[in-house]
Each structure stands twice: as C-alpha cells, then as structure tokens.
Length: 525
Ligand code: SF4
Image 1 (cartoon, rainbow, N blue to C red):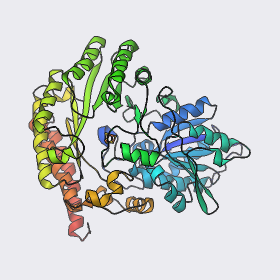
Image 2 (cartoon, protein in one colour):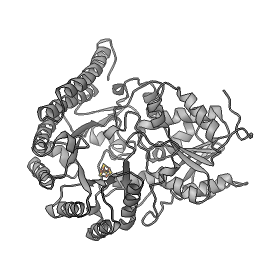
Image 3 (spheres, rainbow, N blue to C red):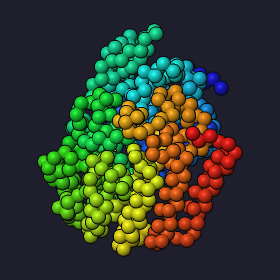
Image 4 (cartoon, protein in one colour):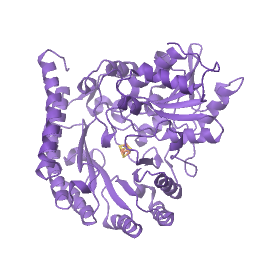
C-alpha cells in the first residue's frame, strides 16, 4: 500500500521521528539475548536519542522517539512492513532518524529504511551512532534509502540539521557532523563534539511514543563520552572513539548535572539507575562533588548500580555504602574482569590476581552490596583452557556470594560470561586484526548486513574466529559456558530444579539445531 502523506488525511505530523530499529527482522533470531532482559532485539534505546529529542523539542520542533525493536518484540505476528505503515500513517514524519549504534542493528535499520522509503519516498532518513559513524561513507555509497549520516555526537548538530532541512533553501554545508551526497561525491562536513558538561537531559521519556514494557523502571546513564580506558574490542574506547566520533579527549557531564539526571529519573519512576563509567577516573574532586550532590539531592528509595573499572578500595565502597544507608537507597556493583585467566585479563590493563578479585567480592559482601561480574568469550589469545580458568573462578565467586545472598536479593546474575558475537567495527582489534589474532568475515557494512540478513540462527552471524579458537570452538564454548554456569547457580541454590531443567532444555535444544546443521553439511569455516 502506498500511503499519501501530508494531504490533510494525517495527523500528528512530526518534523523528526527517532526510531530505534529491531536487531532481528522477518522471523530471524540471529542475535543472542542482550543483558538484563533487553532481549534478542536489543531494545535498549541509545541515550543520545533522548538528548537530541530534548534539544529539538526545546527548539520548537515536533519530535518523538519510537522503540520499534520493542514493538516488534512484543507484537511478533505483525509483519515489519505493517508496523512501518502504521507508524507512517499516524506520525507522518518529515525526517526519520535511526541509530546504527551497535553493529547488531545494521540489517534491521537498513531494512526499516528501505520500507520507509518504499512507502513514503519524501521522508528523509538520517542514520547516526558509533557504527553508522564508522561506516558513513560506505552506507551512502551502498544504501540509496539512506539520505544522510550524522557522524559523532549530534546533540547540537541535529538542531542545525533540522533548521536547514526545514528552511526554504537548505544549505547542508552549514550542518556540522553531516555526511551527504553531492552528485557522485560524498561530502563530509566538519565534526563538532558538543560540550556536555553542564547541559544534558537524558530523561525525556515523555517523548516516547510507546510507554516502555521491557525494563520500564530502569535508567541508563553514561556520564562520559569517549572512555578513560582502551579495551581493544570496544568502539567506545579512548583510541577508537577519538578515531570514529572525532572527540579529542573526554567529555564528562558535571557531577551536579549527573546527580540531577539521576534525581529526575527517580521522579519519573525509573528507580533502577545504572551509572556507566567509573567516577573515580575523573579525579578525586569529581567523586567528592558527586557525593556532595548526592546527599543534597534528597534521593531516597533508588537502586543504584555503579560501575567499577578496577577493584575498589574499602574507603570508596564505604563512601557509597554510607550514603545509601543514610538516605534509604540500595546499591549494586558491576565490574568486568573480562577473564578469569590473569594473562588474558592483563591485556585489558587489569593486572589483579584472582585472589584479589575474590577478596574484593568479599569486601562487597561485607558491605551487603550485590555484584554482577562480566566475563567475555571471544577475547584475544583466549583458549579453551583459559575459559576453564574463568569457569573455575566463576564458581568461586558464585559460592562466596551464595554465603550471603539469596536469589530474592539479586536483580542480576552474579556472573555473566557473554559471547562477543560481532566485535565492534572500528575497535582496535577491528583495525589491527592480524596483530590481535582475529580473522573477520566482514570488513565493510555491506558484508555485515548481508551476513545478518542471511542468518537465521545466532551462530550463523558469528563474524570471526581467532588464531587461538576456531568458530566452531567459540560456538561450542558458548554452550559449554552457559550450561556450566546454570549448574553452578543450581548447586548454590540460586535456581530451582525446575528452572535448571527448563533453561538447560533451551540450550540443549538450541545446541542440537547447531549440531544437526553441522552434521547436514553446514560449513562453519
Ligand atoms: S569496554 Fe572498556 S573501553 Fe569500552 S567503555 Fe567499557 S571500559 Fe571503556
């Protein structure tokens, strides 16, 4: 059905609609489940949407945010084209802004854009996010449905873009961060990172079209742009972020503004507040101002999850704990040692021993603070032996936490051992794959999108192997890890017999499909 827009039949015409696309479309399930319930559609909306929509709204533009991934996840029966027809007929956006922040959304975004253009050729489509920034040129060369890419952080540039687009004589050369076609050429405008220190609102949930269903009480706050650290697999690392997003040095939200964002979230019933980043890395002055602002905020009854980039001192944990006790809030810690093998862990600048890691777990237990620990499958130089080392320490960590906590005390699994299914494009390992021992099956956006489009199962979209682990070993290790962890949770009474059985069945069924495909000649390379 072709829709006639802006002909008097439509209502709620938007200047720009931000769409967070689904990761999987057309009944495929080529991604593993995202952390903490965000599903295989990765329905977490990139925070930049809220900041951009807020600034546009304040500048007088009609704007909304749609979590299409969540809509598709909830309503699986409706074909994606019908979802898009509905959206276009109701909201008639003049511009659609879509994220390809995480690689996993690349195919979903391209397909949604294709359908939007098919149904409404005058709607202009602009992509943004880290992955879109990295692949900006190739996207415009290969996907005619995409009109523009905006590179880097576009909190302010998006307002300039709307100003030009809505004017009678748009001058695209005036829009910072914009990448666009000019005849046969692709033009890159200069990128201007915004000053985020004092003006940032990530809480414009009123601009969401659908009230969130998944994790509706959760707020994600990243208070820095770029990173202090340089994890080689991460496109948000210091080195990769500078290269892709063109910010030299760090951008940090002032501690008072950060606390204000936390407070506003609590007021908006988002009481589970996740703070990504480690405030200790901004210097002692930052942490002190942060705690002063926390006390002044009057926040109470919030559950704060704070991240540790490295092990913490007792003083630091005590500071958090004291505040939570004094003010009636609760705490949780998240930390990523990456591996239980010290040599693998050292590659990420984390040189502490497993003994120190366990002592740190005990410190948190003494302060009654639950913790989620993250290990990763698919790391440089990882082997089946180092995976066993990691499972061994996982068992110890779960055991010590079981002495204090029960399942009802916990919001997250104590240990997660996730699979890096598709490493970040633009990350250091992506740029120096040989040096890090990676063999990628895609090097550009087109091959990535095709790989995702052609993958029905998650193991078909694994896009690499390493010099130390074949793809088959990686996939089989994933099953081995998840099954081993389930048995540990069961052994320490975090899950019941029935839960163990149900969850084991799920992995066994899934694994059977994989093994059958191999048996039937599926080539895993
Ligand atoms: S993975 Fe490493 S580099 Fe990336 S954001 Fe986290 S700490 Fe920073």
